[in-house]
Image (cartoon, rainbow, N blue to C red; front, side, top):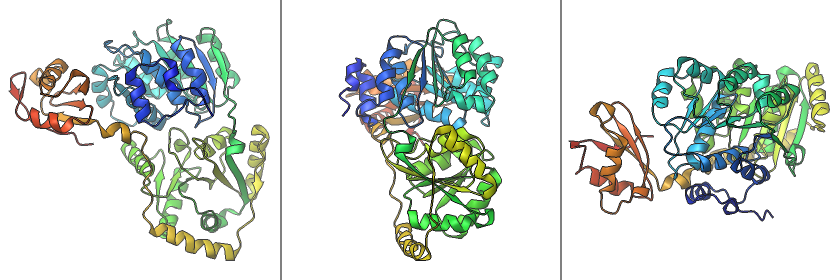
Length: 481
């Protein structure tokens, strides 16, 4: 049993309170090693698999060290996909909630004007994809002068996706006096070169997970002709009875086609791929996280940045062409101490890809026995019973944290010369409200938001209906999600 506790890192009460409400019990191995080194200002190169708790490993100490009054961003996190950029932004917002840390995610396929407006506010943490970060730098809408922490997350995937040139260009524009933290599942030569050129005596940490991928995840493959895949998928589902699964396809067209077939068969499923609008992608991921449907059918874009507990199965309907993608895909299951199952369909022509994966990662992927008709029929009945039950909602990490926090909408903003101090002053004047009950205040042109802590949202809402802000009567309401 891990004897170390988060209190042992001498973290402030604001940070300890949020991580406790987020359900963090004891530090994972990567957190135990990384947190003290970031707190003592060391550059780091961390080799760690996905699902090891590495986002919190850098978010907790960085949130601890952020200077709240600094107007310009102090933290820049680069990640390969929009999903991961959003996930990291949410993690920083949650961990830094009671300290009132403000974070923003910037990525492509979202109107840049919205992001420019966000970046005009006081933002402590910027999480983004390299292309869009570069775009903001060139436009002068992202200030780099006060950046003290650069995090390069999933560096090997940046390399695979051809982003490493952009990452290098961004690094050259940052202050040299900063901490650089690099996280990667594998450390190829190009990544080592990056470390040598732009890091200051980095400490190397290799997290050899006590239960490696091979220990946590039972891996099986089936050799199958392409036109027999769907038939086999039915058999596998009926005999494995997944609670929740991601099914990976190679292309957007394959995802859409498979979802259509699965829906015709009555499965509860949804698609996720790069051809969808970002708002649709975010909604699908949130819906999957809530447990609204059982099967997420996705391209590799979803292999990064989806942090969902209790995915019992990953099914590679199409085997990935990139060896690394195999590990990133199957790493969606067997997380947070659970065991998982990874099933891969291989056509005879693709068999060599499977062998390359086995050799490269020194895995043994066992051949599965095609389920018998009897087992399939038995499983079909059990699956039908399970499908009739409403899916069990998945526990949201931030639910406990948000339970006591209310976001209030105020119908006045910059155009009425409203400043954060005006809102804070009015709210503080309410009986029973202390300054520490007031969270982040966000002011737009025509409206504002304020977070109220300690379950005092209703009290504040009712009182504001009878108060003025800067002498003006304003409309107030609970903010819509």
